[in-house]
Length: 237
Image (cartoon, rainbow, N blue to C red):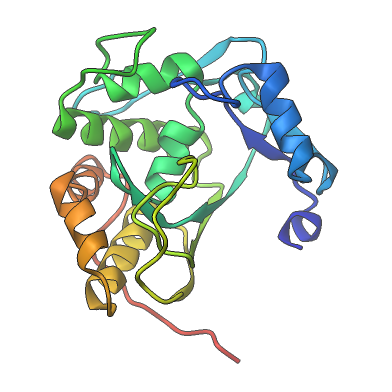
């Protein structure tokens, strides 16, 4: 498996919306139940002690700083493996969501959702400001790693709902494949474009357009997180 190949540590942060991954002890148990603690160098919740590391955001549209899990600084590089799928709040979840919401501490998640207005609640933020904040947070992570980051999006089981949904809708789109890039904006844009080309995409497209999902790509390009222009190359043997 990829974890053994790179001899890496699986990292996560606690959620801000409740559930079995909102508190450290339960979260570690969920990871153990799913076998993640036995892969590679194991599993770490980066904000396990409730603490954050603050990263500066250069040129952000909403945020001037981003709160990530305190153990973020223990790692000098990241391989970001994302299941690309729909999402009830962001419209879609891919590379940018994983390096913003995913790496954000519980406090950081609240700040992203509310565009910097709340350290304790993720609710009630403006949609476009939330998407711009995701791009801002993502840029702070990429900048902090000085480019030592690679993104892989897996386009299978393409439900309109996130994996965090207890009862996600069944996929209407056939599996598409696996895409990778050093540019998270280009990668997520390519995945969005493939959704628009796919058969049975009606519900997924409604989910994305209903949440103005591509605005995170517009924002990411505006602040220099990446480019929406890309060249798709097949490496099938």
